[in-house]
Length: 341
Image 1 (cartoon, rainbow, N blue to C red):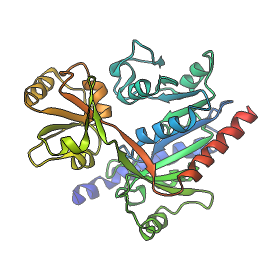
Image 2 (cartoon, helix red, strand yellow):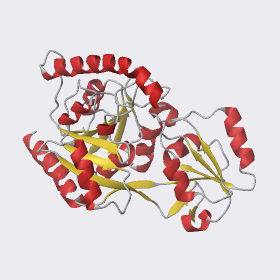
Image 3 (cartoon, one colour):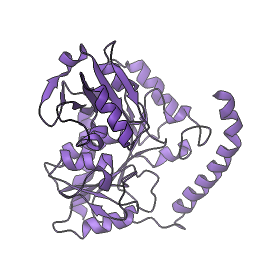
Image 4 (cartoon, one colour):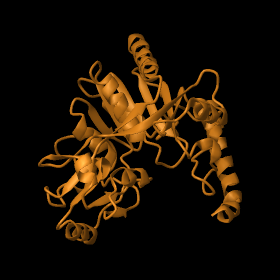
């Protein structure tokens, strides 16, 4: 693998040149970025995935939606629709994409929209009545046609951008210099017992600007798994044979959290579109077992497998320290921005 990376380094240098020129053109105003008269928070990363954008976006929704009219705007990766689509009772994962549809189902109090053209998407949202007071952009760190008011950059513990290479030799979408645009940096998926010394070592590697605060979060698993017909305690199902299914970028922690020695574990590509043959195979495997999957996979599998067999495990992002400070930073930005608008 290291040898292959070395072979691909010349292509990464070309990729570096292309992305660097693009960023310079935006920084100089030759390529135009568009601002909007409402608070816009962008959640994203420098790498190609697996940093926990969905639980962090949901964290913001929970923090803000009791006080403000919130909308989320995503690209809607691998959806079968085109252009701007606003979540409605007619929507499903195929129309919105799995992650936006997850937002739509979990948070009925907010607006959920998808559009690859984020500028157009925001304009469409602001034309609604009532219009949103805050827009959260999911996975839009490199979408520079829109100038967000607040940027949250995520990087995963054990796979931080400071240790990575640009595509195709590595997984970075742009140089680590792109981190300078962030208002805050969050190291996600940390061990719960991460020490202060380990946190400081990571901060030294990331080299944040003086104005940037680095936070650390972990994934907090729910104590229960859920289906359309009921729920089961995780402690109960951990000791039973089951089928674990994950179509996410990094499924190992999910498997490790639930796995029993006789479990079947089935890993698929991120955002996987299950075929009829795969669904038939899953149903056969679940004749005498339940299937437990991630929440993102559940919104795609729901309705295609027996209700009494298919369960999902919810997760949340939790700050190891300084969570109240992060909340205040976001609320202060939103309060000042809404006041100015």
